Picture 1 (cartoon, rainbow, N blue to C red):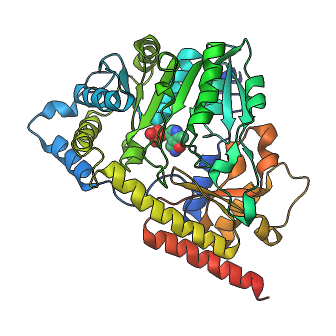
Picture 2 (cartoon, rainbow, N blue to C red):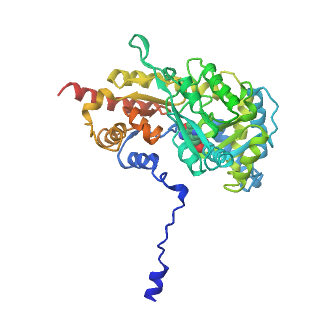
Picture 3 (cartoon, rainbow, N blue to C red):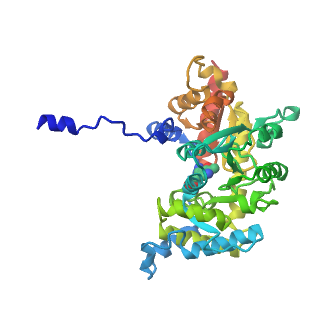
Length: 434
Ligand code: PMP
């Protein structure tokens, strides 16, 4: 009996090779830290305020309606009312007729949309260009699909006249970008507005990327989850609307970001059927389906927004207005203590320079861990304030080039932002009066 049970213990390796090197994840670590220490959490990207009433009410209505079929499976590639309204809404934005059944697919958050894209398009050895800093899951997702991520950084330019830096000061070097395209390039991932910097790519920058996509005949995976969160009158331009791009672009969106309901995990893809048909294959053979009730509520949310499109009471007008005030408040608060903010043009993130605080958290020159990561951990434990190190948004070999910044999320209630300000002010006072 004993020898049998010894035999039964597995000794062969259990991990699939595709998971090698991607098992560590920054979020697991930082979410745990924020939960362990009593913190003001400006780390992970989610609002601590509720979604709009019309959306919550739509969910409750969907739950309690006579139609109990809303508790059952719906169409695998998207609940019909949701794909219909998304086709109508994005058709209007893109100025083209969209077929709800073939040009739209609903996913479990934008996260699953990304997963479907990499699984559907990337073969062993294919290269995928990723612009740094990037939403961290792109890299492991490309690798899991057997692909090779190729990184190209946004390079910061010093602002003029001692002004604060803006996310617009972080730019691609056109020659460097062009040099990354090769015979093996299959796709580029574009994320505008960009997490973590808040950069909103200009028309000129998008045209540069689009021209290279057309020239090299490659796909564009366009992560536009922050499409409504743009400030100072800036415009979010959809790369799919540029010459030659519709046919090669998958647009990715998220109800989590759009309606401040990240826990619902409703996302979507919009694009030509020639591309979406392959996303449907991955979706069909992985998650198959997303929660029906949440899809129904999001459909009603979009219906409401279509009726209020461009009007002052549209949520897509109100939310950025409110967030811009929060952004300005945090910019001012960080600037006052000398944690220099990079003013974001979009998203609900703000990256700040921690150089002036370096003496509080001494450097360990030979450590493998980037300085900003140690700084962020120290700050959670010692100051009760959570933020995410910018190096988490860079590939391994570039992490140490950008290791003196941390990212704050400002989609937070006034009280949360004030509590963060109090911590920073107190810290500053302790620094100046020994
Ligand atoms: N893309 C980006 C750039 C994001 O920041 C996020 C969420 N942080 C996602 C995709 C995932 O969105 P969802 O919550 O809808 O899966």
